[in-house]
Image 1: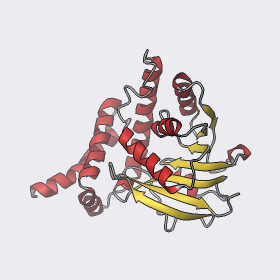
Image 2 (image 1 turned 180 degrees about the vertical axis):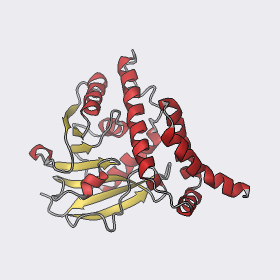
Image 3 (image 1 turned 90 degrees about the vertical axis):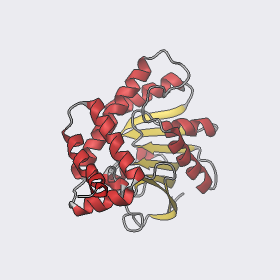
Length: 260
């Protein structure tokens, strides 16, 4: 086997080591390595996965578990710190440049700045919401997450660093919630809730939807939807763009066709 093939097979080998790794910190480092492989050679990784008939379902479950655990632990450390200014000091995956590209994509493709947002699947540390609060005056965000622990931690982070922010936190399943009867300028749906989003019977009560999905190669690690076939007729696609920074995710803006 030549060196090029050996390099390609590293992704499949590392995947098995990552899934079986019991140490959270080692697993996080492996997850970072898997992401870097896709960032550097997405086509090569896809070819290798196809060659091995690679089923990524177990990998995605492990990625979601380690990602959430690492984020929760970082959030708890931040809450216990004396730092009063930068709420994300100590968070290994702050990746502000990436989330700033998401904010720019949102602001460039909406007719006006949203004043009300439903953030679905926000996680324990929401860098994007931090940037939204920095840039939009009088913004109100309702945060929804299926995990009560995540909801509690995220609420504590916001209360510590943005005590005057207009917000509300709720634990809910996007598949069946009506978002408490509210109607929003924008709903943000990221990663984990994507499949529940496309399986909803009714549209989300929002004028526009921002989706973070994976690219083809990124879909080995994170949930992916095809906006050309998976989106319900309740929506129309406004625009889409690959993440220009890390190239693992895609950004999409939808318009709700029966918007108020």
